[in-house]
Each structure stands twice: as structure tokens, then as C-alpha cells.
Image (cartoon, rainbow, N blue to C red; front, side, top):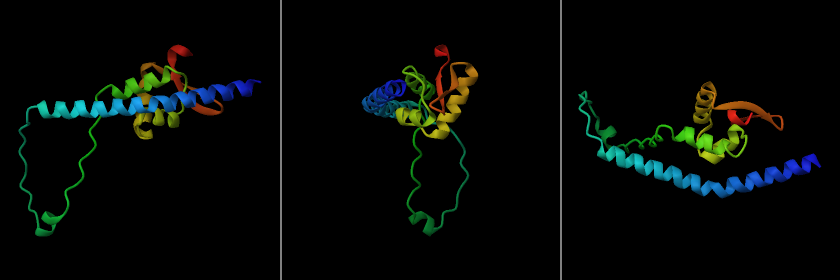
Length: 135
């Protein structure tokens, strides 16, 4: 009976994660749009640039792809804490919910753990994270 209940809870969590994914994607798009607007409004910086000699073959080369804009400070924190409000999650589950890389998540998780906002726990034999207030 216990495993049936856990299976049902897991299915409900998975369904909710699928339901929330579009909202998270929209959230990320809005963050990037707001960041782009902020970049447009920022005054240009004055930096001296060294002269670079460009050969004809380099001039014909395609420009390097633009780096993805960084998220707004605190956005990762809020996304992680928001996801953990619904219960514990593994890093893999948080990656799906927050659309963050595992490396970025691990760095943010360490910071949140040091702050005492979250704690590491075990769920079904796997390492998971949960809000410290729910321990």
C-alpha cells in the first residue's frame, strides 16, 4: 500500500511539473527580454581597445555567436526556492523545472545550503534538496 501511495504522489508531481513547464519557459523569456531592455538603457562604457590586426581570411569568417544573456540576479534563487515549495527535488528534477544547467544549479544549491535556506535529504535512495523549513 505504501508504494502505491508513493507512486500516486510521484505521478501527481510529474503531472504538475509538466503543467508548470510553460510558465517557467515564459518566465525565462520575460527575464531575457527585461535584461535586453536594461542593456539598451545602460549608458555605454568607455574602454580603450587595443588595435587588432585582422587578416583577410579572418574578416571573411562568420562572427562568433553571441553569448546567452545571464539571468537576472536572484532569478535562479527564486526559481529553485519556488520549485522546492512543492516538495523535495533531485538536481535532475530541478534542471527540468528551472531550465537551468546542472552546473549552475549545483552552484546555486551550494549557496542556498550555506545560507540555511535549503537542506540535502534522501528520497527513494537518491540525493534530493528541500526547503530547510520543511525538515
